[in-house]
Image (tube, rainbow, N blue to C red; front, side, top):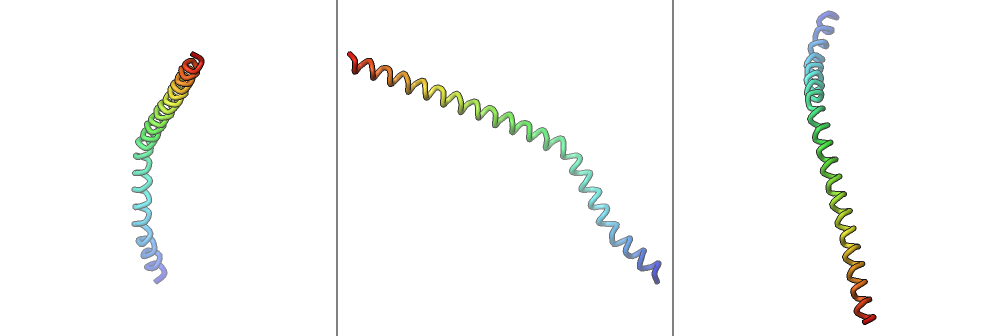
Length: 76
């Protein structure tokens, strides 16, 4: 009777091991693709940050130019 219980427990755990192994294989296969997507998102975010920095710089330059022109008009 003990042998039958041990065999039954072994068969009950076997599907879980197979599922765990398949999951591990799938995750290992997906890992390079996920790393690539993360690097692409980082590049995209860097581009957006540069665009925002350039926008702020141009906005400040425009504001400075407008203030200088209004100061010149007042002086004239």
